[in-house]
Image 1 (cartoon, rainbow, N blue to C red):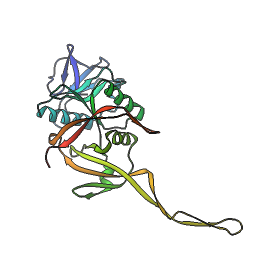
Image 2 (cartoon, helix red, strand yellow):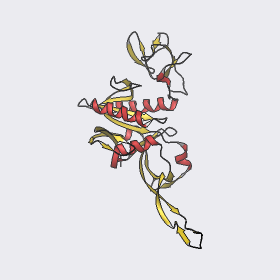
Image 3 (cartoon, rainbow, N blue to C red):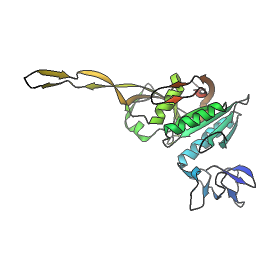
Image 4 (cartoon, rainbow, N blue to C red):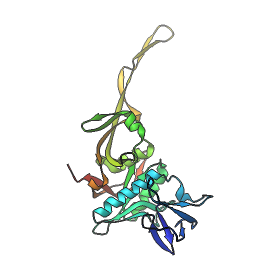
Length: 269
């Protein structure tokens, strides 16, 4: 975690100094300030660890939050790490909360580990009801680079099996596609999913009485695989924020609330 409390005040690990006692804002347990050259500055719970805020937290996740917040501040925007939104269910923290010049709140959710559809839909609805614009950014995994090839200056994966929450994020953003984060290069890519077709081989068999039957010999869209096209890479400081509104929409599997959506656009051609 990047934020702790000391004497009732929020403090981030970068400005904190060793010596004072720090506590977790969630469980109130004592946390230890960790600073080093190889890892991002952070606070660690003392064992035994039972706090739910530690669940799913990784160094790459913490690092991504710092990168986004730093880029926002560089553009003169107010940005806070692990900002608590009281209306959110479960973990009430937004990874990064920013404020537009007119005061609109924009929540950045950087998703390193899979999140359940019920949970992401609840959080998205809570942001929407609070009037907070939101952007969800899944992390790219090694299988994207192992299974893809360069194309048109970007990257193309012919057979990509999106995680369920990635399908939700892509549908939430609509025609804008979804931004994805590469923790290795610390860069952002604009991803678009399109249908992947597979060929069903033709087969022949005979029923009793010698009647010949045929099957296959056609192309069909795969339910599991999509084609993933990535445009990039872009550094966080090269991306601008645009906010739009979307209507509520549902399918048999996913539900998207009417909400303000934050989208990133490259500042450089």
